[in-house]
Length: 259
Image (tube, rainbow, N blue to C red; front, side, top):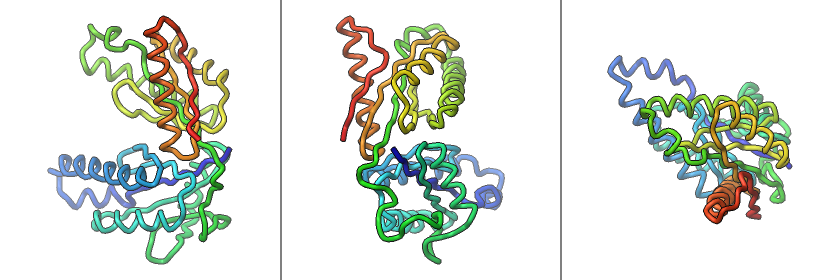
């Protein structure tokens, strides 16, 4: 199983923001929100899925995406955000972490596919076809907390956020040991981009974090040929866990394939 990641980044963002003056924060927050919206819109239309990393950097699962598709998205982004210096770095790996390293190396080596587009690839990548075989598979976990509204009913909104951040940190630490990448996606939900983690590995990690944080985590595992299909399958799996729980069946981990 191989995964392809495209890391989209606003380059030289810090120096550019300073030119806006000190009363800039509201503008920057709106800009970042709009950019995330447009990235998700453009990539999801091609079967991909985008995660925000640090607001000026985004990770897209781009299995099966062709270089012309990247160029098409890049061109639209440049038109929409002409004042920003946007780049893409494409990486492949047997694990998401390795794909992340490969994309980092692509950017570090600075080998752009054309002179006019800041899309970076490693020397071994093909320019004429998808960097991935159509037979490659993506594995995504969709994790949420069981009955969080009841558990946190006596806590203030900010106290709840503090706990969620800690859970995110622990999930990230544990799954990174398996070279998987964890992203917070809102509410009490997380998605983990993996490659071929076994149910046993996943269950051990989920149980460990649940015990440490004194919460109950559910995990839907999705398998698909693209990021969007894998996420769809993962959410279907999570919904199945909820439905089974309503029927009196306790099954915190469930897998769905959407190939």
